[in-house]
Amino acid sequence: MAITDGSLYGKDLLECIEAVLAGGMDTLQLREKLLTTADLFRLARQVLPICRRYGALLLINGRADVSLAVGADGVHLGGDALSPSEVRGLSGRDFLIGFSAHTCEDLLHNSEADYATISPIYPTLCKPGAKGLGSSELARVCKHSPLPLLALGGISAERLPKMAAAGVVGAAFMRALFQADDPQAAAGKIKDAWLKAVNPGNIAVDRGSSL
Image (cartoon, rainbow, N blue to C red; front, side):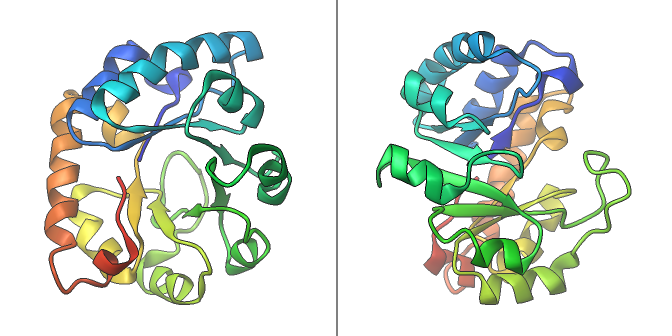
């Protein structure tokens, strides 16, 4: 999963989105918290055909209303958004719902979601001062989670084998993609590393996989 934040990376956002999808990311989370509702809606309408062109899913961060209005595939909810159960009542079963989790308790209380990101796995500039879970704790969380998990926070291509071995079904990236000199090449490297990490016999294969 590629997660955008146009306020941080200072590049042409649509060009970067196209590049990371061309490089192999199969899900895009549009996370543009500084935009007005109208501007987010207009941006999402531009992004949706790009995602469709590459067969990628489009999720809108925090705004189920915008996601439903634009015809996106789903929403990713943060701590200040509606709960997964509240959104499920509005959207139906075909609408993908993810949320940001940081503890096992978060996962147990949001069973109406389809997946969760778990973060931060490693220290990251996106969450200054936050201590990373590490791969061992991640494996424990995956074992007890009722939902498929995507690892987030300080993940690199080199760390993907540990993530897959811990039991996540995918990983999510921000800086590693959108701060790269060549976002398409960065996405391709990540995708190749993931496909090698989930070779036959790896636990992640049986739980599905997403990047």
